[in-house]
Amino acid sequence: MIELEEKMNIDPICPHCSTSLNKIYFQWLRGFLGRRYLYFCPHCHKVLGVSHRKGFWMG
Image (spheres, one colour):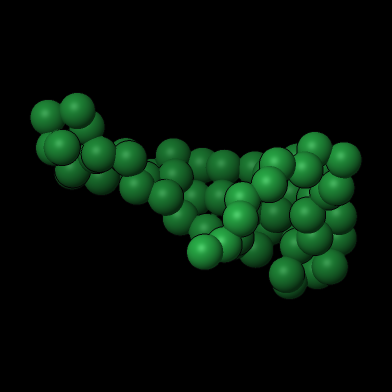
């Protein structure tokens, strides 16, 4: 089992430009089903990840 621990005093590092991330930009993507968000580095603008939020009616 992997333990999960919150750390607020450490800034993550961008895997692309190796800059400390104290802020992450995001952009809403238009789509037919649910909402998608694109997360990217504020320094090099490379994509860090994409999330998908389903509406309440989609389960």
